[in-house]
Figure 1: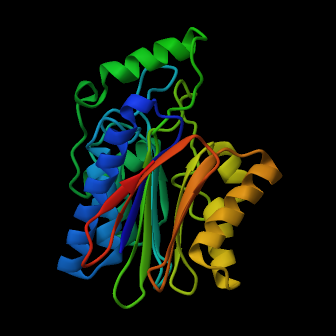
Figure 2 (figure 1 turned 30 degrees about the vertical axis):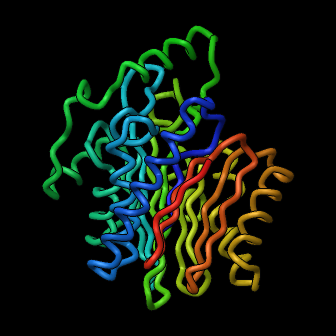
Length: 290
């Protein structure tokens, strides 16, 4: 089972079907990898990789820009069996930061690399830097100009992307990737690369990926909170609903959450106008919504 999200916010009505379809395609590809490899981690990573390559979303190609007009990317992965994780933040342009986060997990020396250190790690492990012009879109430049001129808010509707997966043995994993906030200060790091905030996985409870206001998700520890509710006996949907309700009430947070438990039961919740998502289960056609 694979569930993905394409970011919480308020995607314009005319674009909602396309955002949902992108999530459906990513979830289906994640399930294909899950059935082929048996790895929940590889499935979650592959699903996010598909979304990073889709410029509709704020991750990888098409990611939003800092106030200096540059790309800085955040991504993380976590697997639930040993609770290993890997993450990068404030990463300069590389095509698929989620793959670099996966390499951090596999190497195992550290969990999180930042900025130039993340870039050096990536190059040392065979990843090639990208030409920024191949990853920066006209839409991202226009959005930055509007934000800096005070004509738009810094959020990016349909932004951060994430995936959770559960294999046939009940092993879970989560992955999340983002460009962050439009016009953010250089060096700002959101919740997505922080385990327990934007991404969390533990076979004893479940896995979750979050999207929304990064500073609020940091403070609340949204994904760990949801998984603690799973551990306490709530269903996946109950855990998602309660987490988003408390997130909004306690820190005035705005965002969304996808959750899966070890039985493959899912939860999807948001307190924003939209959060595109896709769901793929073995033996069923992949579905999507917003």
